[in-house]
Image (tube, rainbow, N blue to C red):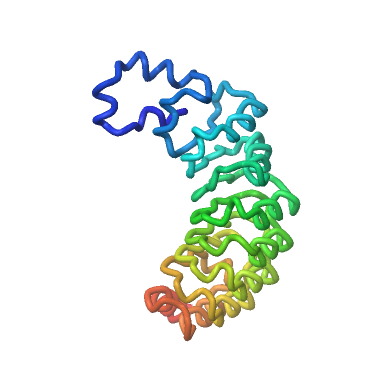
Length: 239
């Protein structure tokens, strides 16, 4: 709804502000919503989950490609609705951070062909463990993913090794693993990955990779981007 106010300027000039206000509370099949490509579920959202789920089966809303569920647990129900074969929405970005969920939700996300266009996935602070990360890494549909944010979860070296060996995630350009228990072994797996060669940003903290041991492995990688190696070479030398 909030994105209704982000219509192109040339469209806004032709529409009174009060009409824009009313569209925020309009029925989901309002023709004006065809101009929106993003959905944000915030704390002031007045729509019930059932209404939202029904809305995502309306053909006029198939232009929605960006979803921010704003740490609402309702987002899990909506995600499940999008994963169903009868839904024609094909998300390109999903932010589902700060919501605890388990392996079943991750498998829906990983296995549904409706997410084959997904380029950005934000799962920060979702209490994810290795099993959930392995499900993502072995997905058959997430080959378009460019950005994966996994900050603040409970991932250990087992999950990191799965990410490092994942062919489906070979197009990743940004991987955020901060505040996970990567360890020196996990850092070594990232450094030796032949599938993460497109990474431009690898976000981890020194304490998450065993300080100098992990930094040394990342700095000497034969596969990681030179800028990433240079950054970790500095930290390895400091250690």
